[in-house]
Image 1 (cartoon, rainbow, N blue to C red):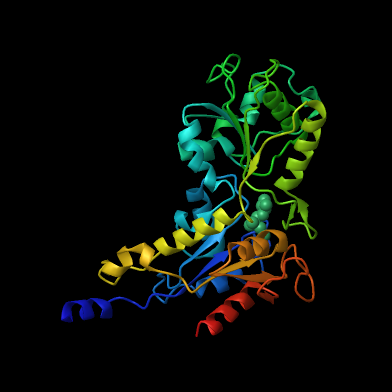
Image 2: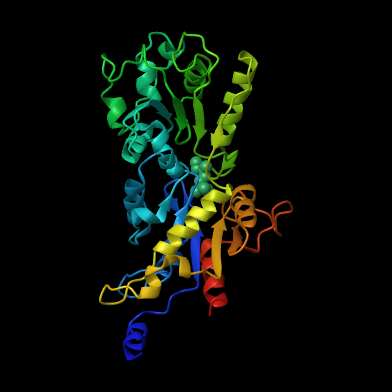
Length: 359
Ligand code: G3P
Ligand code: MG
């Protein structure tokens, strides 16, 4: 009918592709943009600054809430990024809320791990920094740590109370979450071993191991230093090896993040939601039915073959992997074990390739 045709005309052509960008080693090295990565991102917006092509960031990093990371990235990269466009390693932790909402949980890692968990809705999330402070001499090496381990802006740790906010001497920790890369590996391994082998109450004995979750399992990643740095996967190996030597039952744990297929499924559904409203802010009926939209191609641009490329390959159609040479991978040709669908030097080159391919 005329009405439907008129409506269709008022709707911009819906792109049949979307893009997922890895952050560390593709967009940023530390806090510095790699090459002219902001320029590559600007190509995803029209002249008025509106989003033209659905895209998101799919990083295994984290440590601050998605909303804060979105404004930090917007500042660093000079484009407007919405919180929904930022998927971090720990983002799936919010799906565990129904299990642990009112339980005592401990969270560790750089940044503000307990704030991340509280924002997801966990009512009794305590940072490992704070938790450890309630147990005298739990870390025998702390008197030798003359540096400060207080993190710059962690509201919870900066106000560590002498009186615990929760009764940590009688209440058992039900789960431990490694939200981001741990800062004090020695202290964290000691206290996590205490929690895990005591059934959640350091000093006690119990057969039951509290749940243990890692946001990601990257062995190494690209940070500001020229060669790769040890990541959360390296910390997991250290904790697991030690725990398995001191405890009669091997560590039980779950790791999230790429390359898990669920991360790519979640990214696809977010990209579907990033649909573009018409100029009058209305949505076409067809747009409202997200399930009716199928991307022909979803590009994953990453620097780590065994994480980004492996994940996209496992996820299958419509994922298409593009490997850059700006991070973990520096090979001349393609990677042998996890070959990408396409290899480029930089993210700018990846954007050029995608826009040409999509015509
Ligand atoms: O700690 C961050 C690291 O594990 C990887 O981040 O952005 O390369 O997935 P990314
Ligand atoms: Mg990376």
